[in-house]
Length: 380
Image 1 (spheres, rainbow, N blue to C red):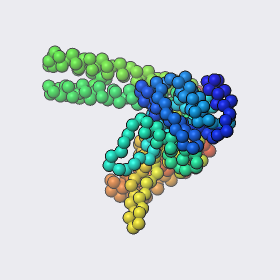
Image 2: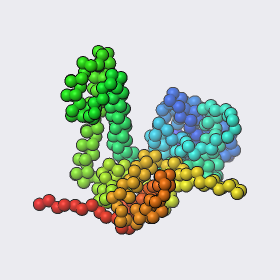
Image 3: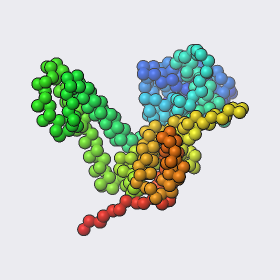
Image 4: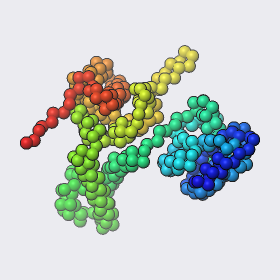
């Protein structure tokens, strides 16, 4: 790292200019395209994760393109499985790096287009130059701190474990139906073992063994779910999550939903205004107006899908549990008497308004108009 910085700063020639670098990150190889302001491109291929090779390529490109001593290196790559470690390493190296939302990259709409790692890297490089020239060409993601990034692991793992639990129970239920066995109880619950002991002989031996193996995996997943939930509840009880506790004071907001909202958005993101907040969640309209044609295409869905889905669920709970609030009354006045489709449209609009209200509640302590806090009982 020190060698790279020294070479880039001490290499002084007449040409000058900045370096622009793009990465196409693969599982086994990374394709790098490096150019100067004159668009002279150098291309390199390095093994995935080989930071020493990346630093060496930067030095080679700086020497080949004759950049000046004060040259700044700008770089970019698409957000993906490598996450943020590469961004942090490049930043420590002195590189001005940005991480780009892959869904925001423009694509040629012709029926067929050539696509290779080299072409993708060159495409990113061209857009990077346009980005630093002041043109809005893509969406740049904001970096969470290592602590905030790690804090998101709890609820994401819990979500994945919950999906695995559902998959196992559905699989066992489907196998039992093959022989007209319908438990009528929670598969894997406290009554499951007794029911299975009474009916296991009605199932052929190979299928019985498969069900029992599936049941063993289900048992493990249920134990891990309880473990993760217990750890989360312990943190809340010990007062280590003040924002989550503050959010749960509102009726209709539970600890699970509050945890996700804080860890995904409100705990570390900073928004300049309500439009920026709604845009980050994908809860903004996407109108299509061309000539005399005006069509509303629905919400953009470009933001955080976990929070977007959660907010829609919370919006339904808000209408039911906060009927006297201004938000619930607005929804009932506009959409409650309409059909099912309009209520679904209205609940998304309410979710957007609810997100803004919760943001102001956490940021400024402004309780949503007409909303009630939960009644707390003091214990002697």
